[in-house]
Every structure is written in structure tokens, then in C-alpha cells.
Image 1: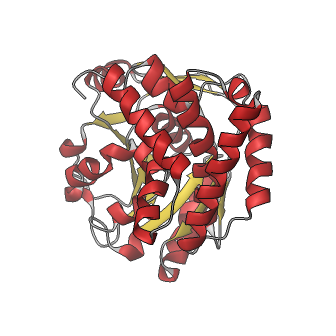
Image 2 (image 1 turned 90 degrees about the horizontal axis):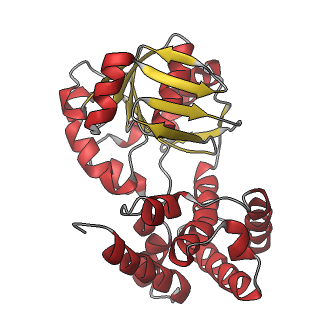
Image 3 (image 1 turned 120 degrees about the horizontal axis):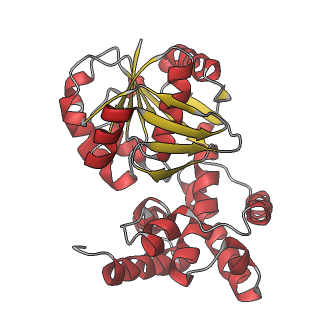
Length: 308
């Protein structure tokens, strides 16, 4: 079986490394030239919970030719359409595509390129970092929740779950993975966006009453739009979950802060608070906090990101 990792940043390299460790045939796909050249020349350097130099295949998405059995999507949300366009030549009627991207609405994009019965949606809390090109650092533990988009894809979804478990990735096949995806998006929609705009840690954001008022209002908006989308989230349970997560991540600068403030890159705001605000317009309801924080992040992008 051949698995492509479409988007081989930190998380893509983690999954690629662990799948390769379990004797799965893996090919990494990415567009970062220095990263590609380093891995092609010296292999992937893995540090942390695994210490190893791994000889993994890596290439640009458009260069892949062998038909895929599985594709695991780990590209940035805004890069997803281009990635799917570039890998059409390796997708056939038997290819299963697993989406583990952060954010909301990705199934709407994937449906344009992949048959619906072949799409498996998921969410993961595994983490990893990329200290430099060709070097991934693994720390901590995590899990994956998966579900096929259509009931007819359940058998394939369970096969992929087993494959991921053999790689030590703690996967579970679920009956309601969309709720888990929304739950994680809500956490990111409170922490990532605000920490990026305010240039602060999670703990600093949650330390003030003003911060908590904003956080509670954002959660209310996520829960309201999720309900309109047919996703059931309990408002108080969601708040408890966000606040518990904040305690564990108190010293952490979230990924959107890393992208925007630390590296001056565009963010995934349109797939978090921006998605909620856009859906609110469709349903003709108000989500003023999500709408405002989305505009603030885009304003910050216009100030910090070159060639924006």
C-alpha cells in the first residue's frame, strides 16, 4: 500500500516517519525546496521520542506519478485547492483521502476533487515541530479521531484507523467526528486568533476578565453556528473544555501567533473565526466577535506579511 503525505511540514513529517517505522510505504509531498533537497540528500532527521535518520522519498506534488492507495492531507488550509489540483494524477476511484487539517469547511473543497465516498474526515491532537529543513522534532503523545464522510466508506475508514494504530498514532473510528472537528476549531478560534492579534501567550489572554468575556462570546458564536450546521455542541461543556485546555497551554504561543507574529506568514483565520462569520451571513444571524477578530487578523496580515 502506498501512502502519500500531502503537505510535509511538522505534522506531515511526524505521520510520515511513524508510518514508515511500521513498514508502510510512504512518499512525502511538499513545495519547500530547501526541505525537499535536504531530505533527498540526507534523509529526514527525527529527534525527540524517536531518534533516527530516515530515508524517506519526497518530491513536489506535481511530480508524483504512482497511484495512491491513501493520501493524508496536512497542507495549510489556504493551500488545499492547489494541492488537490497538483495531485489529481495519483487519485483514482480506489484512492482514500484522509483530511487532518485544522479548521472548518475542508470537506466542501475536497468534494470538488475527490469522490465523496472516498473522503475520510479527521481531527488530531498530535503535535510536532520543524526546527529546520529536513528535521522534525517529536514530543508528547496524541490521538486521532476519524470518520468516513459517507456510511458506505466506513469499512475503508476502519482499515485506515488500523493502519494508523500500527504506527502508534492512537486512532479511533468515530460516529460523530464532525463534532470533534468543531470542538478543536472552537479552541483554536478563541486562542489562536486572539493571541495573534494581542501578541500574547494563552495564559496571558485568559488572565484578564476582559479576555474571558471575549472568549466566552466567541464560544457562544461557534456553538450557535455549529447548531445551525447540524453539529451539536453544549455551550457550557465547550467553555469548560476551552478553559481546561488553556490551563495546559498557558505558556504556549499558538500556531497562528507563530505563523503571523513570529514568521510573518498568512494565517488560517478564514477557516476558523472567518468560517463562522461567513456561515452567519448565510444564516442571517450575527457573530460580531468572530467577524471582528477575523478583520483584525487580516489587518495584522496586511501590516506584517510581505506581498500580501
